[in-house]
Image 1: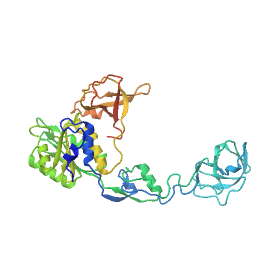
Image 2: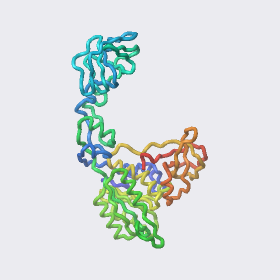
Image 3: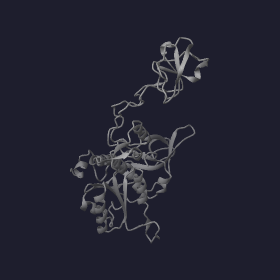
Length: 419
């Protein structure tokens, strides 16, 4: 197995003391390979799972030419330049075909989804025809083949319609079911173990002692991970004790594909996470040119990939969404990535220092003219978790960009589809 440090050093512009966001993403991505293990599950249980096989129809869908509208099926050859009068020869309903073959000068009343009568090639909607004494008057302007769905128009026999790596959502479940398939092969779920570090962290339900804070990071991590459909293992709070940290890391590495920690990746006296990562495996420690979320670690302990995130709550969420989420999706074998960035006008001046990428928490909205605008949620400190709760997007300010004036165009990353 190639060492992570060798992979990272091969990335052009790699600088662990001032690493650009895109370089960090590239280094992480280069180290990962999707999981290959799979299992078969019923179609209904496959929602949110990642497909592990080609879905190849054994039948055409639809299986026969059928009508797209209620109306009358006829032969286009019978149509005249003006009105056309045809004889009604019977009916074809969904699930009940017309017996026989349509003759010259005849038409058949049809409902949506009915098998096209033999000999017919066109359907005229019922709203435009006139019917009297078994005679049907068709107005001019009809086109051959209109309102007809041909066999195999949706799915063709023998042609793959879904490929491995596809996230199975409601439409995909319906598509698979339309082929009469009851089970599908899906990738096994990514197993993720996570824990917080620090003597200052208190659990919910206990009284705070001087200097303590309640641990919120495990709850945001749980929520972010649960949305990805991974298997979770919460190892709780691990104190700043080398023996306890080593035990937690060894336990996590034996039972997970990825380990996520919060806190302990800076240079404080009590930050034992860094040396423990280095002792047990291989870890890179980065100062990423971003705000929030500057200190971060990435590595491997055994077969488990390691993500050491900062301790401040907002920095945890920003680094998760900018690095960890994409990495876990790649491990899961998913082919989809982050939602696209949009452009909006800054509704107010934005403070920014060139030389780092900033992820300011914003509120995206439309003005009276329908244009997209964005404003911040106010105070942007990395410990102000309220700024994430009140936001609906990240305002992504590029590495080289400086202060933004009101009205300037900025890029935004909507939370919808991300968080």
